[in-house]
Length: 135
Figure 1 (spheres, rainbow, N blue to C red):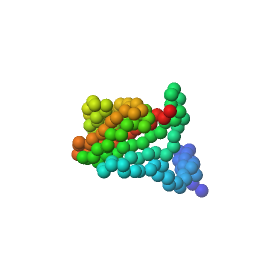
Figure 2 (tube, helix red, strand yellow; figure 1 turned 180 degrees about the vertical axis):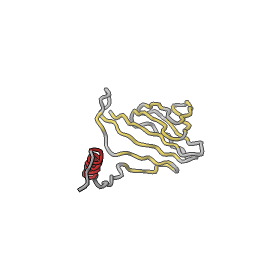
Figure 3 (cartoon, one colour; figure 1 turned 45 degrees about the horizontal axis):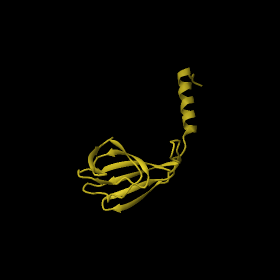
Figure 4 (tube, rainbow, N blue to C red; figure 1 turned 135 degrees about the vertical axis):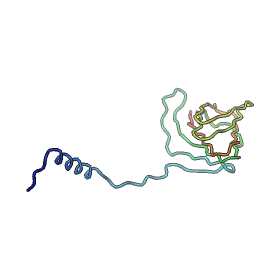
C-alpha cells in the first residue's frame, strides 16, 4: 500500500465533498408573459407581486417594454405610479408635453394618469424596465 500525504488526502476529501454536493440542474419556468400591444413593442410582465413598504402603495411588480428600432407606444395614461429605467438602448419620450431623451441607465418616474409616449428612434433594441407601484 502506498503512502498518502496530507495534501493528497485533503484533495481527495474535497473532491468527494464536491461530488456529493452536485445536483442535476432543474429547469426553471419562464416566469413571465409576453404580449405585443403595438408593432415592434413587446411587454414582458414578470410573475409575482411583492408587498410594498412605501406609504400609499400596497404592492409592487415589474415589467419590461422591449422596443425594436422605429417602434413607438400609443401614449395611454399611466394606470398607476411607476419608476422607469432604461436598461438597454435609448428612447425619446414625450411626457405631459415635454420631450426628453432617456439613454441607458436613465431613471424617471410617472404618476397615475400621466400621459407618456415612447419612441425608439435609434437602430438598436431599447428596453425600459418598469417598477409598478400599485395602491
